[in-house]
Image (cartoon, rainbow, N blue to C red; front, side, top):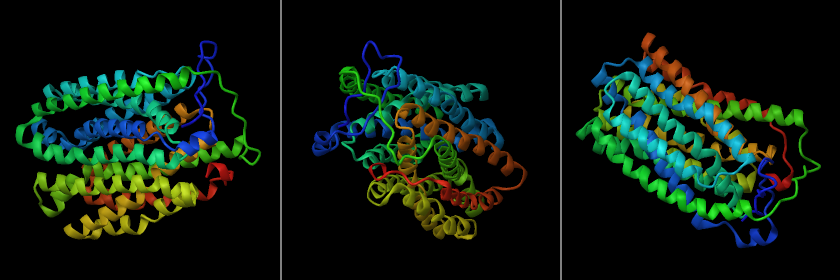
Amino acid sequence: MNKPVVVSEETLTEPVLVSDVAPAAKAAGPAYVVLAGISFSHFLNDTMQSLIASVYPILKDTYALDFAQIGMITLAFQFTASLLQPVVGHYTDKKAQPYSLSIGMASTFFGLLLLSVAHQYLVILVAAALVGLGSAVFHPESARIARLASGGRYGFAQSVFQLGGSFGTSMGPVLAALIVVPFGQGSIAWFSSIAFLAILILWRIGRWYEPQIKAKKTAVARAHPDAPNSRRVVIALLVLVALLFSKQLYVSSLSSYYIFYLIDRFGVSTQAAQMYLFIFLAANAVGAFLGGPLGDRFGRKIVIWISILGALPFTLALPYAGLYASAVLSVVIGLIISSTTSSIIVFAQELVPHRFGMISGVFFGVAFGIGGLGAAVLGKLADHTSIEFVYQVCAYLPAIGLLAVFLPKLPRHAR
């Protein structure tokens, strides 16, 4: 476990620092119970969030929505998270809030209840925004908790954390196919029980987290002599945002429109299309877990190179493949492209080691929010062209991975 984060009565207005792990803590290894709890909470959180995209076909048919309106629902959810996550992260860097996670989950709870009874498009947008608010509060502080519980294995801890979220995202289509499609929009309210369970778990994690931030005042973190200068740090952060944007926009395009793509091109049923989407998202979950440990062992920059550019040949082939070949390609793409998430986030945290909350908020919020904006633009493009054309355009997104050439080499202790 990391050295205690410094928040005493005298320093509540100073940045909350997560310094390097002490040798004794490294020997003890990660706090597996805490990692399991925060990962399971991430699973529950993202399961509920993924329901929004999974019920798009129901909302589209029930309220006669076009693809642009579907994209706006994604934007309402993603933009709320994008706008608030860096703000939440910046605030908790200065004044940690151990119980904010359970309070934020209450927003998701009410958002799901509202979505289950919404009969007007504006109300649907508000419900999606409330779920996004829960995401904004959850991600920055939970990422800090995962690092505190890492025992020095930062990539591993981030992968365990990401695994819960990725697996939760993959469960949305399955639950929608098994529950929401047969029982209708009102059945979304049943998932509020998941939010309540998450609130209880996060409250218990908050009790573990509270002593970590009240123990004592920490020394100011000193920069490593081989660390990149501030100009290179800024450039590197912009590159990392661009890389995560390219990955997230591609994943968002599949999450939001893959169901419609399969229905339009191959004539499969809605439930069958949701199962194909589950296969892609499950592959994302596996790839997200593998990426962190690989980054710990071989270096995060190498993993970033391989995971973004490595997916390019397969994304280029996807628009021209048949139904079953598309399923196989989606698995390969999911495994490769999702392995970069943990490495990108940990790389960014190590570039700015005194702003973990804000950096986590920026990368979970801004980059993902830009992906939501891109989804809305893609929806508009699909209305004017076709879903097939959208996937032909998105196939080139991994080429943005070439920007990784501008990433600096980090000191060996921060690889």
